Image 1: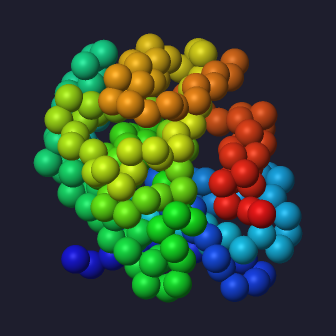
Image 2: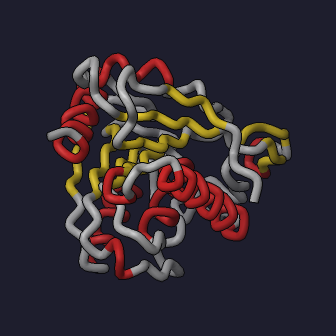
Length: 220
């Protein structure tokens, strides 16, 4: 499998941890690149950031317009009917990036997967089914598209999960974030759920919280 192209931000010291961060529909790997300096991490934090680019595909809800997308979205209702086959393929591509980080010397327990909107849906699938333990998941303004079909791997049965959602999100309603939390709890996980007074975006307060999570998970 050819690796997804990606923006990479190397630390000033040898990397001992990695964050693989997926963008949302219509964006690209540069979308969250400016967030890194705002996370409040130490300047010498040994964390490599990897921001992959989604492939360009036709998107049904946008009249078939070709744009960067992790999978096709077929309907914008609360059920969020999506092309599951494409989502699974994207999840496998993300797992291949995890494999590459391990080949570069990063232990799986030192790798965080983060995703915004449909990128978060891919991250849920990729992280929960990965066959080696990961450090954690940051699920941002997203939903659990494969909640009814996923078969989690036992290696990540204690995976740390932080869900962040805007209270005024009119693209991915906050109810979908709540539904993801409930389903994960039913599956035996203990996701932490945080909300912010924003729409379908991230705020500085949220970014600082993400930095605190990364510090707790990846730094001594």
